[in-house]
Length: 292
Length: 286
Image 1 (cartoon, each protein chain N blue to C red):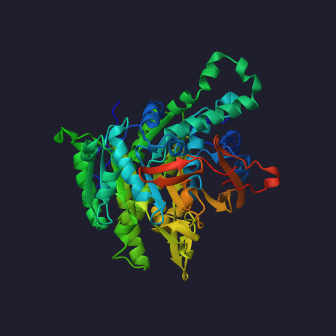
Image 2 (cartoon, chains in turn blue, yellow; image 1 turned 60 degrees about the horizontal axis):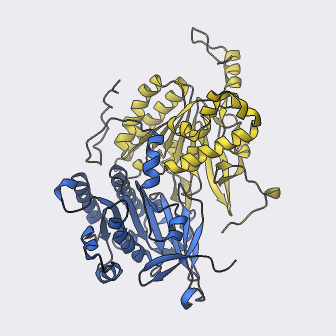
Image 3 (cartoon, chains in turn red, green; image 1 turned 30 degrees about the vertical axis):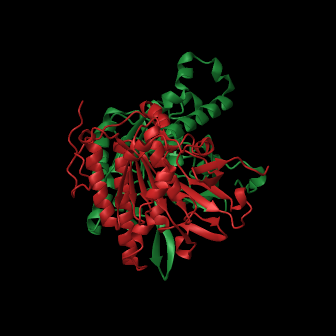
């Protein structure tokens, strides 16, 4: 009953995983792990918004303007992963320099200095560097035996995708095409790692003011500006779930600072809903609606 | 199963073809308005392309069809199975379960006496049963995608109860660095020919989900379906999903027999449904 070997592809596969024969999976058997393998955000309100946390085998984007809590959330997740039921290490890929080590230290629980051992950090300054890091990450994920003291990597954080594309690209159609081909290449690799190793993948993204050519992209008000996640609709096609962090223009929210909101812009498994949150010294937390 | 079967010679006259067409059932989308513009739903023996921006509901519709194709015959469905080829990783099993539950609760609402029916039909109406009757392929590269579609010809020969093949999306892995655009076009048209053949040979519906891209034409950026014009010839039907304010709409852009038309639809907790608001009044949910 074994299927015949598939015809060879017309060109070399971009994947270096050994070719497997197509084999259907039974969704019923995937159901328990799909429900269990969620990474909690460490806050019941935000977890409720996300139906339990961030899903594995899927790419989640966290978009928002600067200082809306994107990096804070990533650091928080990196520290939560080893303590979560996933009991995992995380791989923190950063393109903004320097890596916020002090913030990570401050967030880490004082009683558990060992938690920091489970956060692997690497810098990527260009799309090419990121792709080579992801190829190395694949080796690390495929051969977990090489690091006996380390827990398996089940969380990959990329902070941020937009800063990788700041330079070297202009607005000409040829450059836009080159750029979006790279989005799809990066996304395909992230999704493959997510699927094969049941990883939670989080990618942060900046925002840009709404421009005419980005019709069809997510739009939200933040700090009185109409903004969209950066990198256009091409990149929007590359993520499974998009979370949008926004800030209200006026500062009458909790603690005198502007109200912040985490909104599910789209997700295959979640309705479009939102939750207000605050950034505290010890992390990002959802708050109950204050107005009725 | 009824009068639509071919004669032993395999030949068909015009009358046979017509009655075959009439007896052929459609796969409901979950929305009556959407079914109406599609002439009853998604057609077997045809390839239907569904495109739209991220978040408009392509995957939701794909999952809905994988569930609805399984509605048992005694409840007006096809009682078939589904093949779901997931190239993007958006097939979330917990959502599939919810949509199956929604489908079952609608069946029980429309057939209130079905509770009294035999235990075998009640056993069919379990979300677990619906999940297990989807053959799920997760694809991580375009080479795997081609291999999977080649393999489908054999697989469907062994699984004749499959009535729908959904590819979500057909585009994703072809938008990476395909420097040789002529090769891409050739690979894609071979792929679509195979899918058309499969649809006809196994009397099933093929649904291809497609992404939307911006194209620079006549001095401005416009939204268009990905993969270019060469691809657009290879589908029998084309449906574009789009936002109109806060409402989702489907637009039948191409069909061999139906007029161009559009209809609103909603994505609810239970799945794809009609927009239910008094006089189609827009409801803003924030």
